[in-house]
Amino acid sequence: MQNSLNERIGVQTDGMSDQQKTEWVLNYCRAMSQEIAELTDSVPWKWWAKYQKLDEQNARVEVVDLFHFLISLAQVLGMSADDVFAAYVKKNEVNFQRQDSGYTEKDEADSRHI
Image (cartoon, one colour):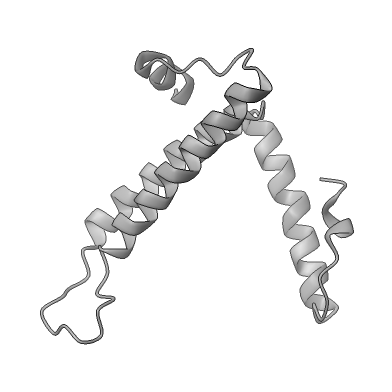
C-alpha cells in the first residue's frame, strides 16, 4: 500500500543507490521531524497558555502520518513488514534485558544481532 503511494508521488525505493538511500533516509527523517512538531502542536504543551486543548483527532492523524514515513523509510532500507516485525521483537527483547539488568551503561553490542 505505501509502496503504491510512494510510486505515485514519484519515489521508487527498489534498486536505489547508496546515495539515493542516504537522500531519502534524510528526507524521511526531516518529514518525521515535521510530523512530530505537528503532533506536539496537537497537545497543550504551552504551560503558560490557558486556552489550549488536546486535539486528539488531529494527534491520531499525525501518528498515522508518522507511520507512513516510517514505512517508507523501512522500504528504502530494504525492509519488508516481516523484517520490521522481526527486528521489533528482537529489539524489544533487548530493551527488556536492559531494564532487567538496570541499564546502567550503554552497550550497543547487545543490538548488533538485530
